[in-house]
Image 1 (cartoon, rainbow, N blue to C red):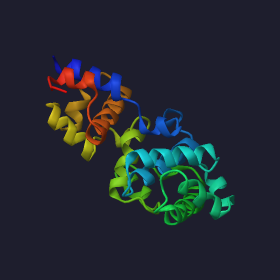
Image 2: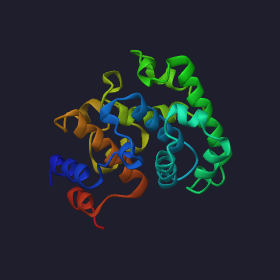
Image 3: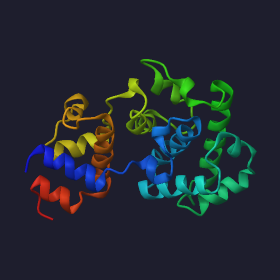
Length: 213
């Protein structure tokens, strides 16, 4: 099959964004949705499975603890409890502290609006003021925030780049984006490639890539 068939299979079967999975609508580009995705990026960059990170970030939203004011107003023990019951038993206290400190930082430095952290050439560096968010976590954030922030596009990232190479797709972000006919499709392709690397390819992706299951 062609590269187009492979890209279509990836997007169709594994192109759900991680931000969507935790309940954040990155395409709205509101402070609340962006901050929830920042939380998700912090959790996804920790030494814990992506499945547990997604579960924890989704549980925080369900508990109403995905907003800056909510995190700061909540009893620390409640944040710890939610994380503890949703995949973070080993890191619940430290992660709760990271999230609350991050909420305070973005409230004080950027008036609670991540969009004010944008800066051509230094957006990712400025986002790393978040506690627990290093260069890897910042690139996780960029991987899906590039859907709405022009200065981050095109971003590929380590796991997705590795999967692209293994599937015979371009490993340069610009070349890969040319196969997608649109930014949203590219962002979903990068998410799909990340899932391939972390979870394995879907049956349809294996078929399109000519790989035996």
